[in-house]
View (tube, rainbow, N blue to C red):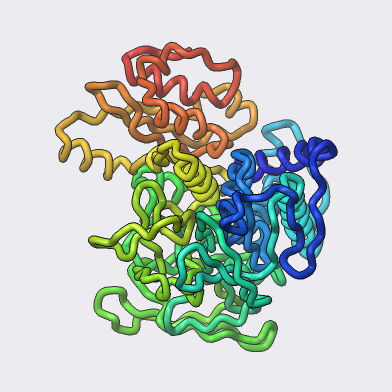
Length: 522
């Protein structure tokens, strides 16, 4: 949703800036130098290192406050989300999802539709769809920055060790800014023993290029990224084997949702799995000649348990912050596994435990590790600008939603049920639970998509919504109402009396809200 909002904004801002001062090209400093001037003590009021969704959101809000703003893009406008993450992966999921739907003869027959002949797809065409979408969104993001007069500096920003200074790694030129925001994002984590060639053994970066559709692909890790790519690969005809170090698949998901997801997304598809094992050694192969070799060891005993030979392996073992070699040590900043410690206002601390605030240096997004989601990074960036302007603000991360764009989708806001029960017991309140079902929803049944639930967890004493977990068609869109409720402190009593459009999928939530207070929904 964050990207979509920015895309729309980009179109509006380009037209609006026909009446604004035009940026002046300056080859010696940056691609664009705005006519807007800072107080003169510094080159900029705000300098953002990194130009992903977080850095972009911070820069836009900074200019909205009339602050002279620069972004050190590092040749990567849009960052991971736009170029190697959220955006292109959704294009692959959309295209492969259509293939899955058209191949599901039984589902189509229930709708009165018959498709004759073989369903075919063009791998290169699907890959091009993802690449073209990423390029278009990237262009829109850059246009919005330029249109608002943000100085886009192409080089990577590096801290010099002196307060208020940033060096352009490409040119060596040093700039000054009253406030510096670190928004450098993250890169895929590759475990020890895994050799990546981005052809037969690849991270999400390589997978998004869709260079091939392997007959048999092993996916190391069963989190968001691994699940989404299993959806893509099985729709396009691959067999998938998950290799998961934890004892259960989808270890970070709510357990009830994970079990239902296993039934809907794994058991009914050409997917098997190994749990409780590490991929201790992964050796690339040669397409069509030599398989990829994966040696697995028991996660507890570290003894060898199995060796797999597959056509390809995708490494989906999480991400690590991209904070190395940017001068943090020179500023006296200690990182924890690369993550930069921050307080609730996103002010950088010298270290995690007992660290002091580094004046006028902030960190947002994946680099601080608080919540590695694009829209969380954007929210943090906007929050930082609010604090810079003297309007105290803190992001409520418990109200930030997340989604996995499988078919059907999974979405959530707030802690898992297990975490909620632990929290309730610790804080001395009783947890309530209510559920809505897609199988009882007219719109879902009309689509032939009756699988799924929406689970609402709430404080019985106050009625406030604590968390919501959904698996079902368009869950990623449905979760926003719930996130808003958590953010606003809305109670289930209030939500139960709010009118939901009929017939829509939102009535699944209406059923859950009403059930929480003993009401029935039609």
